[in-house]
Image 1: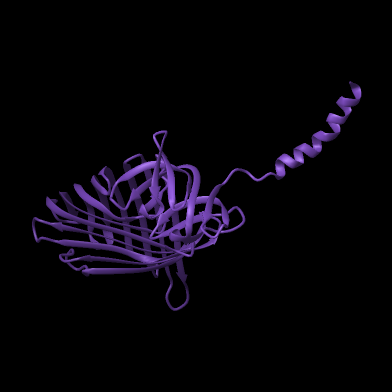
Image 2: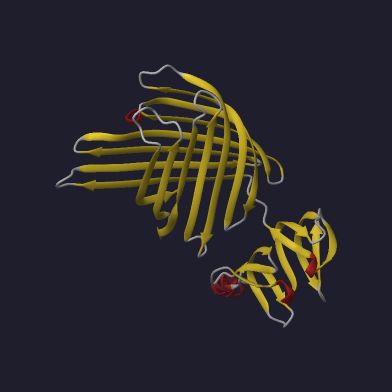
Amino acid sequence: MKMRYLRALSLAPMLAVAALSTPLLADQLKMKNGDVITGEVKKIEDGKVFIEPAYGSEFSVDQAEVASIEADQTFEIELESGEEIDATFASGDDGTQTVVVDGAPRTVPMAEFAAAVEPEAWYDRVSHVDVNITENSGNTDSRNWLVFADTALKLGDHRHLGELTFTREKIDGVYTKKQDLFNYSYNWLFKGPWYLGGMFSYERDPIKDLDHRYTTGVTLGRDIFDDSNTFLTMSVGAGWSEEQFVGQPKDSGATALWNLRYTQDFVDGKFAFFHNHNINYHLYADNNMIFKSNTGVQFDLLADVYAKISFRYDYESEPAEGAQSDDTTLAIGIGAEF
């Protein structure tokens, strides 16, 4: 009895090593040529099946060359017929695939899968802080700085986006720009890519004699693209605005709203192009049209730290007396995501 106990103890380390060296269960792509690719199946898109192996980066194979897929996670699947189902990939053979829908198996020809993606998480949040500073001394002493922060929060079908911008410019000790800008938008995705929403913004810039400008409204929008590499959304709406210029009485009335947001990722998300703009058209007083845009590129430096180059353009068709209609800012700086 004692001998058996000692033998069991001597075998325990070897059993532990064997257990640790056994690969964890993984998704599988079985190819028509007999190859088997293991990893994590990510999606089916544009006739490609994307998989990320444990030993490398995500890559794709032609869907037509895949015999079957095995994956435990649930996917949102769109069939060529337009039908949408939530299912797991079980197994398959001879050009057909078995999927499990609500616990029941169903056989679907491999060619009938138009798209498949993992459902979005119910909760998701991402925040950024960008800092841009330029300082010159000599014949002209100047200091420019721009701080931009945003937070995007998703709770199921509800999205919240808050943005805060501080811009200061000083030349020879005299401020030439003091802009504070806050934007908030809310989206309720009530039917697929369509959403109803609301917005609120506040702006002040005493250098341009703008004491304050408040705008609030309701919007109707649609996500045109929303996948791992591309996001494009547009919305229209109507609201109410109040503004006051220094030394002038307050003015307020109805306003028409337009917003566009676009982001395109490249090189597995290490490089990105973005363009955002919004238009407020005041339906009162001088029918002032206010256009604001932010366009640029962002690329990773280290972990969650990135460099950003952005070009901001502001335009008002009816600016305050003595102020110019347009204002541009080229910002080069660094930021962090958390």
